[in-house]
Amino acid sequence: MNICRNFKKINKNTYKKFIDKRNLSMNYKFKNIQFADRMIFIPHCMRNAKVCKAIDKGAFYICVQCKGCKISDITTLAKKLGYKETYIMKGGRAIENILKTQKPKAIIGIACYFEGAQAIKMTDKAKLLTQFIPLTKDGCADTDIDLEETKKIIALEK
Ligand code: SF4
Image: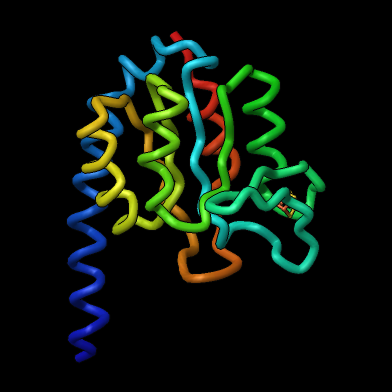
């Protein structure tokens, strides 16, 4: 029996339950926030580092929609709908600063379940409405998401 793998699985299920419950409970209010007051946070491990031309802003990147990865579709849709900004984060620490200066009312966060559960604690502190999108493939590089599901959440409205 692989104890480590089982331990990770138990934790993942716990985080998943917690996050699913939170997404559902905030879904209605989230829909009522206009797109201009929403932001998206994406982990940098989703970039296609081999071709990426995103602008390096220090703690985060801004996608230039080169179509090298799924972030291009996310950024294109967010811009079309009028989202406040889409950030590709190098780490979680800078998020708090962005929230303080940009003052969004709602955010979409993409991350693994563990990071998502940690981020929800932070957004609770900031009294923000959140929708969390789990990575379908996590890790340190070449991570992935369900793009169609992600687009549905980005476009959520009343
Ligand atoms: S679509 Fe954006 S994030 Fe993806 S590789 Fe191109 S510039 Fe980088």
